[in-house]
Image (cartoon, rainbow, N blue to C red; front, side, top):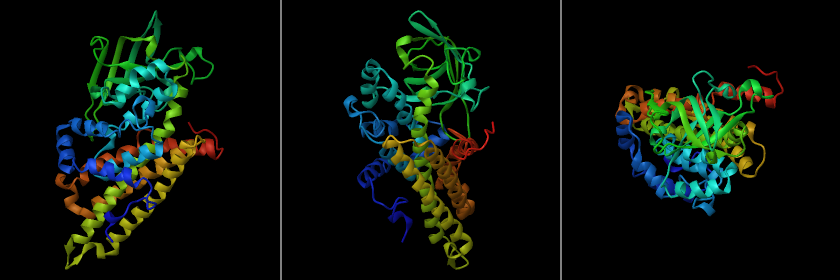
Length: 392
């Protein structure tokens, strides 16, 4: 039976949702994504279609015009985008960045921003956290936000802030209390919703970064950018806790994207191995070809089970830090294994742009490194789950 006749998740859950996303994605075939990859373009039409269908507003409460979906349902949306051959990375931040506003924003902030985001009138695609000198040590960021009357004045630099050029709003983490003045280094960080529209060009500079994938990433320089105090999310100094609160959802959604990638790679591998004939037999008849595909499939199925466990725990309000991190790590590794198998199965044709394998190959690698490296996931598990000494 060809793999395309069944899903990685064989339970049949969310089948209607899957069909809806697949139907939309069918309007954006490989040629669409290849063109954008070559041009380093942003998929405006795709994002608009996803917004119009309600998929990008899935996690916004129904009271504000969103879908009121669970993280499990949102994960299916992103999985199916990648399974179809697309790239959910171009819009996934609209889901997981939204959580800080939904969970910690004031009633006024929600009324102001969420209906417009759900309707597609605004985009919240950018998340400014990482800095060149701090890397994964978020508590060491140096971007400052100093109170001046009714505003905060932002000074500093962010890097790897994707889609800032295509976003109306950006969620920004900055220090409001110097590191040396706090008892715990996780204190003194605050979260802001920055309106990028009409921002002072002298105070805000966005520079695109060329990378191996079309991820629309940038570095951003703040030189006295004024942000109204009413745009601060939650309490001053609590920003680190607020972003941690959303990271479990982020891990689960990223895991689902990797599951989608892995499914695409395996499906393509099976199809090519069945149809490619060399020495008068399909290459898939050779164990040297079929065993790696089967192994990749088994590992992907196993990673998917952890994804579902993490999503169910999250949606029930239960602690899920370990499960969310393991889901992200296992899914990213399984997708990368499937990517290598797919390229190997296709041989030289895997390097031809028209087959999309090389594009998806490049895209799949990202999630072993970002938004958190798999090594940091292992460090987290070692320390917080197994009780081993902190290693960093």
